[in-house]
Image (cartoon, rainbow, N blue to C red; front, side, top):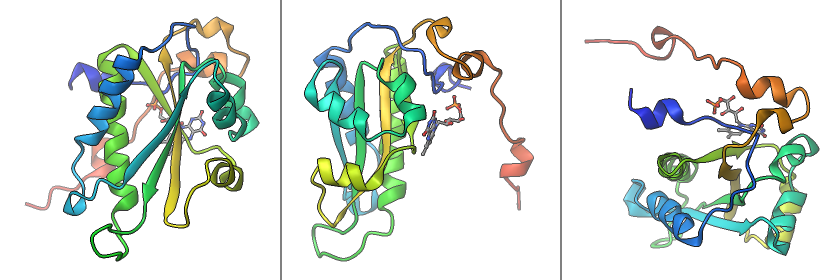
Length: 180
Ligand SMILES: Cc1cc2nc3c(=O)[nH]c(=O)nc-3n(C[C@H](O)[C@H](O)[C@H](O)COP(=O)(O)O)c2cc1C
């Protein structure tokens, strides 16, 4: 497998190193080059650097278990998707899928620059919609914490143990079937 695939990991221990604006641009541009149905590009990203009011706004929307480590992230992002095609106002049934593709592009670009990106589904949906003033047509897909690798010993349990645990995956036979 490619080294970027094996290196990527949803870490929780971030160092205090900041992410530059230039690196954030590269990460967002990688997301923008994902494929999408009718080239709709339904993904939108709302993000903030640590130490800003915007960062606190996003962090406040996370569930406590995520707040406990995500406060050390260099950047917090909210991945949002538009649910209808701009061209004709019809529902785009691929909006979640396509935004997921953009998110993985973003994650892989990030790891190529030693920046780890950790997606999170643990957040308060109503609060997020309200504080970010999302339209009816927009859906929150996930939050993403970004940062450079830090010291796992700085984490509280159970995250400290989880950080270095061997990761597991289903067997290839469980997720695929050759019907040739
Ligand atoms: C949509 C989504 C939601 C997730 N939600 C959380 C979360 O709320 N908190 C968390 O710590 N990790 C969360 N994760 C990370 C997963 O737990 C992680 O990807 C999985 O355990 C595999 O580990 P790996 O990414 O290190 O390979 C989420 C991942 C995805 C893709």
